[in-house]
Every structure is written in structure tokens, then in C-alpha cells.
Amino acid sequence: AFLLNGEKHWLTRDERAMAKLSTEARQRLGHYTTEQCLGGKFYTIPCDTLLTMLAQVEAYALSCFNYAIRQQAEVNALTSLEEVENYDVTKGYPEMLTFTI
Image (cartoon, rainbow, N blue to C red):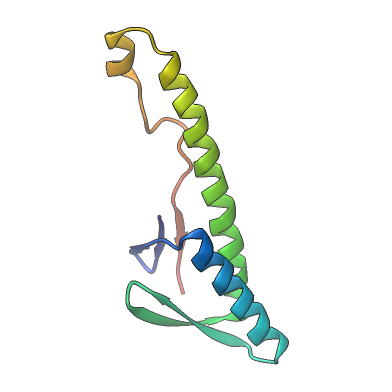
């Protein structure tokens, strides 16, 4: 998830790709802003700002995915109940992105 103006949101991979593609198209056609719907609310955002946000969300999603794969391997290597009970699933998790518009 990421925070936008204090509200929690997420965009799937397909939603991120579609938002990027449509924002780049609007920008190429001379528009300076675009609309993005998140959680039923429409936000008017400068195209450059949204493209930067989408890049950051994409990089964050990759970091989270990589963390989950590493974590799965670590959990699979645990051999005792005590190790499982003491395993901290939050340690090292990427910090949530925060945006303000």
C-alpha cells in the first residue's frame, strides 16, 4: 500500500501500467494534468508528478516482492517452533510510500 494525502491506496500492476500509458499519452498531446481515480476519488495531478509517483510505486512493489521471496526462504529454513514464534515478519520490510498532493 501507499498513502496519498493520508489515505491508504494500492494500484495493481495492470492499473499502474494503464495509468502510466494514459498519462504519457496525455502528456504527449500537450496536457499538463491528468485524473487518477483512487478509492472512488478522482485526483487531478500534474502528469510529471503522477509519472514519478507511478515509478516510485513500481519500484516499491518490486522491493516488497523481493522481500517476500527472501522471507519465504527464511521461513522455510526455520526448524523449530521457537524459531517460528520469534520470527519477525516486519523486520526489513520496505517502508510504505507517502505522497501529498
